[in-house]
Length: 355
Image (cartoon, rainbow, N blue to C red):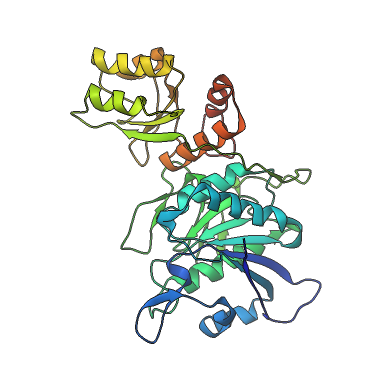
């Protein structure tokens, strides 16, 4: 892939200058209005004209742009492997990484990066914007500048946030705990089941107790084998056996994220449980997650969820749908054994769930 590389002349370079690699994949943040009033991809070589204060941050910034910026609605496994590979290839050359990404699927991409970059010990901060960088009231400047500061923040020479995160509207969230909840407000992301990692006010207040600790002996491992033969099935009142069976009979399907009610509840009718049982017996992996933003699956708490446990449905605990479906893709790519995939689904790989 022919990446576009721009190195910005930001401040005085010294031995203490921090370095950040910005990966621009696409999205609203990197858009600007042209002379006709249309939105077009922004030339990052001119970013200092839009955000001159970057020159005072004493950060050596390199920007790698995808050859063609993508709308995040079009993000695919190929884009995920590209993002992870760029970070892996440049890992030793930078203090941290900032990924500029469209908001619609940012939580999916951040979740997948947390799995693919095993042993990560540096900040990878996903951010974006609700308004283009050239708009008068754009949130792009604040999101980008604070993400750069977090990506280079250290204590005793070690990064403060050595994990994949999402920064948006003054709040830093664990990437695989985040979820987009707003499309018209600046506070687009929430993390209902895990505390925020930092809040940016006059100073950046880090919640160190919730941040994954720096592990000096860890080495980064790039795992790029993924399998997207999965689907999400959201339960609703009135769902039929024909719908269930049609989904489970999709050729090649290997795994299903089952979005249930509340704490993991589902219909208790015989036909429903029989449909799930047939799916499990034919080799499908069924992962139970809650439809609630702040939900946690507790299989066995109620009679209906106890039946799910009995037929072989796996509890996703408090994992988000975004983190669940990407975890399923990741594990199916890593293991040929369904039993091993099931085993790994029940334990956290990168802090994505609480067991």
